[in-house]
Image 1 (cartoon, rainbow, N blue to C red):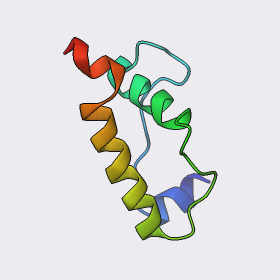
Image 2: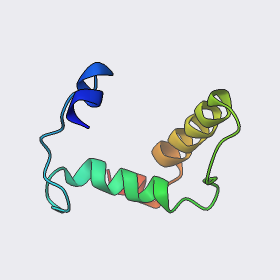
Image 3: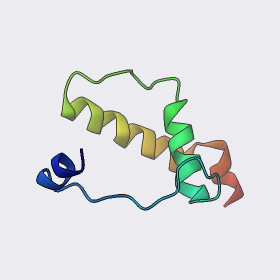
Length: 70
């Protein structure tokens, strides 16, 4: 697996798995994305995934309940 990863140019992550305080901001965002009611299990196209993410980011930054605390 290490050689395949290197052949594909994928950098090794040094983050600590399952550690809640590794990066609390990104962990919170990933959890929100993962549990979004409009998230599909799979997207038909890359364009569809990008469009969903743009809509999600707009909602997250403007309408998400935590945005009012910033």
